Image 1 (tube, rainbow, N blue to C red):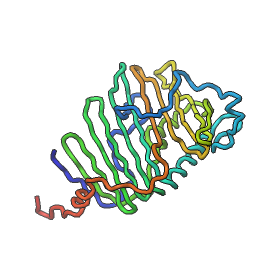
Image 2: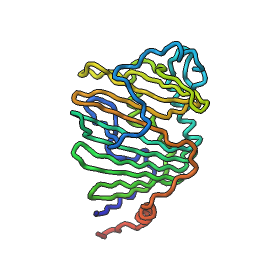
Image 3: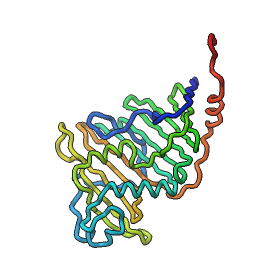
Image 4: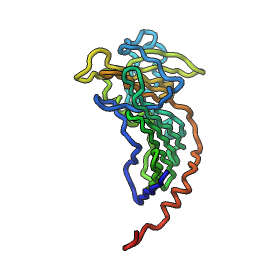
Length: 280
């Protein structure tokens, strides 16, 4: 494997992870080759209307949920972001595009962050529609962000100044696009008590593209009485298959993020002087 250092000093607003994942017509969704356990099962049609039982049983205990069984999704997501930011977390997102019954592209991301995002690690792996694989890892502390990007042929490092802010799924990229395409209110489609906590399922249909008919797809969230989103799934039919994005919160309450084994090498390359005038 050849290695090409890519060292940048300064502040950057974003770090490239590869192909951006969006839920739009004509754009490939990418996700993990395997499915995560605990994904929310989706019906083939749009979400059903909430029953009287859902509307009458403790709805006020879930942030953003009104007495009639509809949800203010902005309030839900704000509660979710606040809880994860305050406590630290581990989460996984996957995106998959299927065509003719087979996965044609896939991408997986694992997120790990300490309280307030003082340290975080994001690991991404993906396969495109040509079968090429790639990966990217970002590790950050209070001061710096280190990035490693790798393909079958190359490996590159980047070091930048830390930009405030930490990605908190499912409010990143593909899910953000899915939320923007919700076509109607989020309503309660299921409700239960788990270990003494109220847990509800919210669902909303996704808008159809101009060139598609039939099922518009569905965005579903599993939310507890603390306003934490534990699972989310967005599915949408395409002309020859299905786009699917999933999210799962693995752990809430994370105090540390270990350094990746390549970090020392990235630091060494960041401090190695480059060629001077007239050099190679």
